[in-house]
Structure formats: C-alpha cells, structure tokens
Image (cartoon, rainbow, N blue to C red):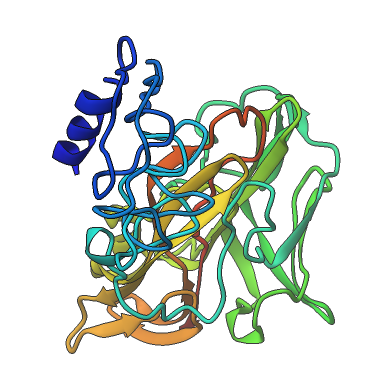
Length: 355
C-alpha cells in the first residue's frame, strides 16, 4: 500500500511540495487532476486518470463514504486513488477483508451503547437523593465503588460537587423487601429502589443488614455534547465480607479487574473474543470487539456476552449478565468538532442466589 502511494506522488505531485506536471497515461494509476494529493501538499497540474491499471471502483481498498483513502482529508484525495474493482470495501471508515477480519459471530443478543449519547444497559435501581451531606467523609467511612470496605456505621450519602453533582453512599443498612422489589434506605433519607428494568432472576434477597457501597457519577463530554452517568452498587454480607450483589452500568466504564472478578466469584476469568465489527459514534469511526468470559471453575463455565447466565463458583451460585467490549482503531472525522464520545459496553450485574 505504501509503495503504491509513493508511486502516485512521484508522478503527479509529491503531496508534500509542489505538484507535478504529469501523471500516468491510459492504463496507469488513476489521478484526478495530477498525481496523488497529500494532506498538506499541492495537487499536480497535469495528469490524466488512467483507464486501466488500478481503476476506481466499488471495491479495493475501500471506496465509499468513510473509506481510508477516499474523503476530504484522506490520502490520496479525489475520485481516483488506489481502489480496484474486486477488493474489499467498507462504508464505515475501515477496509474489510484480510486487514480487519471479522472475529466471528457476536453472542450478545443485544448491542450496548456505541456513543455517550446512547442509553446504557439498565442499572436496575432508581436513586432518589434525600438530604446528603456535602464534602468529605469522616475517616474510616471513605468507601468507593467496588472497594472491600463499605464504610462503618449507618449507611449515608455524600454529594460529590461537580458540574453535574454525583453521590457516594456507604455504610450498613437493611435490604428491605417491598411489593415493588428490594429497597435500600440511607440514614439521610436517600433511597435506592428496584425499578424492574433487570430480569427478576437478578433480584437480591432481603437481608436484615448489608454493607452498601454505591456511587453515582456524571461526566461532561463537552459544552454542547451533554454528559453521561455511571452507576456502581456493591452489596456485601457483613459476616463473611463476600459480595452478594454487584452492579455497574454506564456508557464509559472500566472492564472488571482480575481482582474484582476473583472477589466476586472466587476464581479468575478469561475473556474470549467472539466478533469484531465497524461502528460509529458522533465524530468517530472505530472497530468494536465483543467478548464472552470463561470462569476458571472445574469444569470451566462460559458466560456469554450480555446474556443472563447461571454459574456455580467457590463463592456461591450466581445469576450473571456480563457485557464486555473493546474499541480500537478510533478515527475522528475531518471537520467534525463537537459530538458525543465513543462508549464501551462494560455493563455487569451479578446476584448471589445461594448459599
């Protein structure tokens, strides 16, 4: 590919300095008005598109709305370039074929958020603020999402000052059972109520006492692009310290760490790529890869991407929905300044059903 582009520049303008005066004749490499056109150079003043050679077409190294050589800022620009008539083509900014082979068939029954303007997978709970304090927590009660220490004393909430305020709620409280589902009431009057957006199999059982670690955080994308919100909730058995419920949802989230996976299930897990496809979000085009996970139990157990799955682990029996993705080859469109960012699909919820 590089050799072809250099050949174009030498005969019709080098793309970096002054344009050439010729170009290839009939049967040669096509050139719109004279050779290849570089991002910062000048067009050649001559050159005639060839009628053979590597002609423009619908395939090749992609020709279309988002192809790599074709576009307002591509290399080379114009209606010619390198594409042939029988190669791979793509409309999302990436060549298909052998350069970016599809990883297989996606196992997820649904597609998670692609941009920060999309709705994330359901969190399952609705938070209502009561009268949370503002400022730092006292020493010994500084819980954070996924932390082993959920704080001490009655669970209460602190407002986290920001452009869009967030909340951090930690401590011990009851997990109540109501006609609508579980309810967590904090000492300041804030509440987390089950809203029915997750499958019933994921409802945690009522308990007289649970250690709670909840975080709600809103991140601004840009002044005209809005913001996105992430929620993380961890419930633990105060006696054993084991996780009985773990939930994280949002448009941009970190993948679960190895330590967190082992903390929840008592065994590590291996990510298994299932598919790769082209996607777009706002000003960006990118590739998304999706993953199943295999727990290192005996025998191993597979958790399909974003699919409700029952597993038996050293830390108990769980119902799990585990979505996982990785975004790569992210390219920003030319002259596109403002818009939502790229999202990942890292939603996760696990409920211990027994013992």
